[in-house]
Image (cartoon, rainbow, N blue to C red):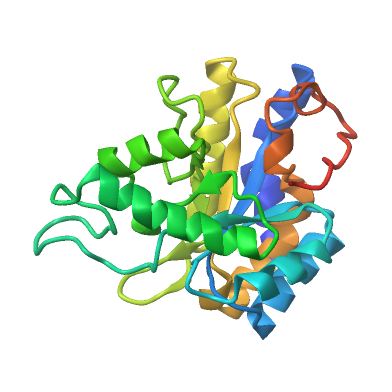
Length: 261
């Protein structure tokens, strides 16, 4: 057994056993950010998705080759594209959190940018359902624009805010970013996983999704090796299956969700 598999078994195995004893299984889903075009790293990512039957939502920047990304996703059951911002450019004034939308932007202008991004995906024969803001910065004006266009939102957080029913966040980032991108480390990642699983169990929030977040372009070899150990344990479901009965039913053999649309 590899070190990663051993750590997974020791650190979250008992918590997963408590879920199973209660007749439940955690609902994991998988989001990967910053795609712009097919690369060897993307090929490796999609190969993992295919190998472990793990549906993936690929957040793609509209200024990239969306048609080529859509083609790559169509070859992998359960893979889908989400809109990842407009151009992934930081437009925040000095001293403000990084983001594409800020207090100086008018709703009409944000709506125009959003419409342009959606059209890029539609030309690639993709109907986007999910928007992932760069730096996970969901400005209120952006939220308003997404609501008007009927898109769901995905950022990074802990438990879902019930006031935002169309929001589906990621929670478990395999990377740490400072001083430079690298694997977060199995112990740190699994400590957070265990805490979030225990929180959902204590609140009986059995159906509350837990989002795995990856960034294929920044992975080091340790990150890739950890994913190979974690994916068969997490068994992510398709974003489109979250909240449906097949996902809510705990199971020792939960079926792989249908391909995301």
